[in-house]
Amino acid sequence: MKKKRKSEQVFIFDTTLRDGEQSPGCSMNPEEKLRLAKQLEKLGVDIIEAGFPVASDGDFLSVQQIAREVRGCQVAGLARANPEDIDRAWQAIKDAANPRIHTFLSSSDIHLQYQLRKTRPEILIDARNAVARARSYTKNVEFSPMDATRTDRDYLCDIVAAAISEGATTINIPDTVGYTMPEEFGDLMAYLYAKVKSLKDVVVSVHCHNDLGLAVANSLTALKYGVRQIECAVNGIGERAGNTALEEIVMAIETRKDLLNCHTGVKTEHLYQTSKLLTQITGVAVQPNKAIVGANAFAHESGIHQDGLIKEKITYEIIKPQTVGYSDTHLVMGKHSGRHAVSEHLKKMGFNLTTSEVNRVFVRFKELADVKKEIFDEDLEAIIYEEIFRAEDKYKLVYLNVVSGNVAVPTATMQMEVDRQIIQDAGFGVGPVDATFSAIRKITKTDYYLEKYAVNAITGGADAQGEVTVQLRYDSLSVVGKGAHPDVIVASAKAYINALNRLELLKSHGRNVKVE
Ligand code: KIV
Ligand code: ZN
Image 1 (tube, rainbow, N blue to C red):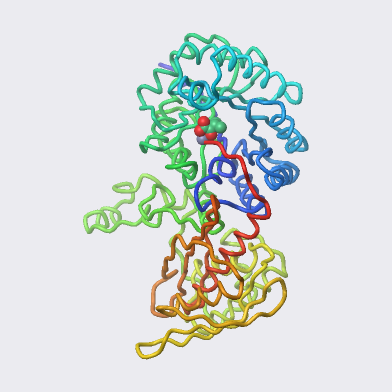
Image 2: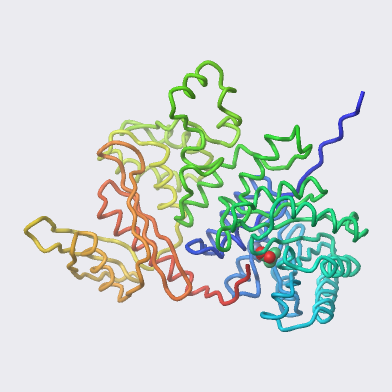
């Protein structure tokens, strides 16, 4: 009888906080990044790419904080292939339990000619020097030849071999512009393994972008050729069309382990909450039909499917919703529920809050229960993210009165706290939301470009809380603010103010360098 091969571990390298954070609207402040990093640790990823330390002092401090506080996984800092970046990355990550320097350099002729204006031999020297410098700090060094999939294959072999000979322990092959096709990518992997013998002594990784919607497919194909690290981001966020979605690649490996003979160390039951946390932090929602974590990922609508499911789940369900932490028991409690019941329920939802945090949530819960009959998990989540997970705000809403209708000029009278000072003013507009935003702009003396305004009902029913998303832009910074309240005008004011606060915070942590 043929002996079954032992399943091999695939390392999950999460780049939500670096590549992911670069996508429009996904900027996070240091406190939010730390919260997400702790969730990623709980999820069981192997490596967290915490940021790009040289980009700004804010990024440096945030990577340093994650390196110091997240002890359960490796923490990587990104660096271009130059001494300043590498030194800065090392300073930021050196206190980590297991620090990694990830240095990268473009290798395609397109990038060499138009962007770097350097020759192939020059780049080869830069790559060698970068890896050697990183190795002088740590044994854990990753090297990425950027735009690898559009690089001349033999030159790619040369640069990869050079990086390994200087001591790189992980070689990452990025499909930087999401250009490759699964078969072609597999062929490239086979070529590299055949030509660069030393590749078998290091961990080979892939970093795929999703421009053609093939990031997960390309990453999966690479596994067949011996790749054992996948770079990915929660909800698939990342430059342009994003990166390989963490939840999708993990669940593909888990669901088809019969075929792939691999496994990851990810605790899949935390996938849904991790996705939710990112959504709440950034305000950037996932599409309802998104695999694994979309609102409809486990919803069966057609009669034939429902009939099959009732008879036997396996007919139409390839993943149990519980496996990814999705539960359909959303009903929680009402106005008679006590502090203890709420506290226990929060624990069941996976939130480990301190007593004083539970008390703050409970006060907000009671206020909401006075105007809304049934409180759902989603309502509680909205309260937690607003009340607990929000940084100290520069701007706060104190009072809002709106007059509107078909015979009145919509007018919003408003009081706000600005740097702890109460300021009052009024605004007019074409409707109540417009009037409210105009009052906020007057009070805060700001006038950012409004990129997006959207309203959603958090749960069903006429008493549902309205969840408003507001996206503001300032230069290259784009932020999303969220607000929830049974009154959509109040929710709109809260969302706008939340976006303003996030923008202020990010401006104070100003970022100036970005990569793919
Ligand atoms: O897409 C890319 O090439 C990158 C590198 C820094 C790995 O993000
Ligand atoms: Zn990338």
